[in-house]
Amino acid sequence: MNVDFLVQALHRGDARSVARAITLVEEGDAGGTAILEQLDRERIEQALLIGVTGPPGAGKSTLCAQMIGQLRDRDLRVGIVAIDPSSPLSGGAILGDRVRMMRHALDPGVAVRSMATRGRLGGLCSAAGAAVRIMAASGCRVVLLETVGVGQSEMDIVALADITIMVLAPGFGDEIQAMKAGILEVADLLVINKADQPGAQRLRLDMAAALRDPGDRQQRILETVASEGRGVTELLDRIFLLEEALRDGGALERRRRRSRELETLDQALELLREPLRQRIRDRNEKTRDPRELAREIVERMVIMPAQAARNDDEHGS
Ligand SMILES: Nc1nc2c(ncn2[C@@H]2O[C@H](COP(=O)(O)OP(=O)(O)OP(=O)(O)O)[C@@H](O)[C@H]2O)c(=O)[nH]1
Ligand SMILES: [Mg+2]
Image (tube, rainbow, N blue to C red; front, side, top):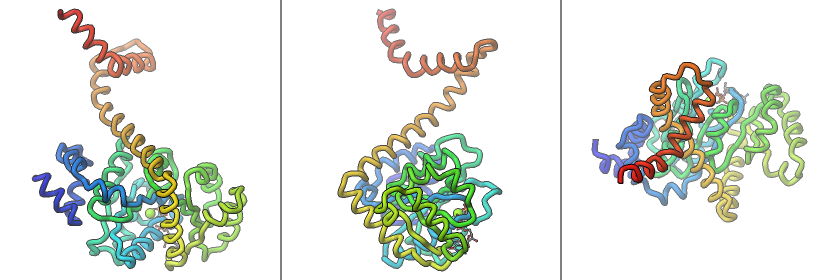
């Protein structure tokens, strides 16, 4: 595999090269790292990453498919990374299916990727972040990141986004109550989807009540009927206005710095996992308390090497 060739092709927007590059990164291949280093920084800087989260079945995938359709109508290339919890609890179709069901299946202007959380201990943030940058470098002006907003790891992924939209729908009372504080904290925009269903008005009032500032209520709450495409234009317009404000005010840069930190931490922990496991096995301790042992191993690994090198020097000379 020729990295330079692949990078050129992906910069031309070649869908297969985009997919191949993401796979190389996910597999931890050295070529993946080389590709990431050569990506077009300017395109990455210009792309907007929109996190789309909310309880299972709220209509995230349907809404994403609609947004993709409208962004394509505006002649923008779009990417979508769907974090699939592989959970039987979730009744909805995963995003890939929904996008395929719509008219985007063969559209070369749409990059689609799903990533499973199952069987994965870490590294998801970093894999998702890399996939997003690859798509952005390939020319996607907007990349959507769909994740079910239930656990902490999903919330971490959402924190990668420039702008986060929380999709809510009537009939999810308990989930929404449980998530409420978190929702208001992470979501730039609250989308009451399934506005055609009974209970939508109630949900809207409930969310409005939770937002103290009247200006906030005006700006942060929207209604959609994703299945019919209603409210999607307004949502996109609102998103682009917000993007402009975030870019102008410097907030976007701050968000991106935080997101880079998060990704770096995720990947650093991922890189440590195997060496740590090996060390623990090598120590073969039978009686020490695991907490104490863990502290000691980490201390030696992270703090000692520099000191050990100095000691070696002293003893060596
Ligand atoms: N009535 C109504 N149904 C909708 C609307 N939007 C989505 N649905 C339906 O709700 C169901 C779930 O939609 P999805 O888009 O799969 O929901 P999701 O949030 O992506 O679900 P997960 O990925 O499983 O978490 C589907 O049957 C959709 O057709 C809407 O605005 N009104
Ligand atoms: Mg979905």
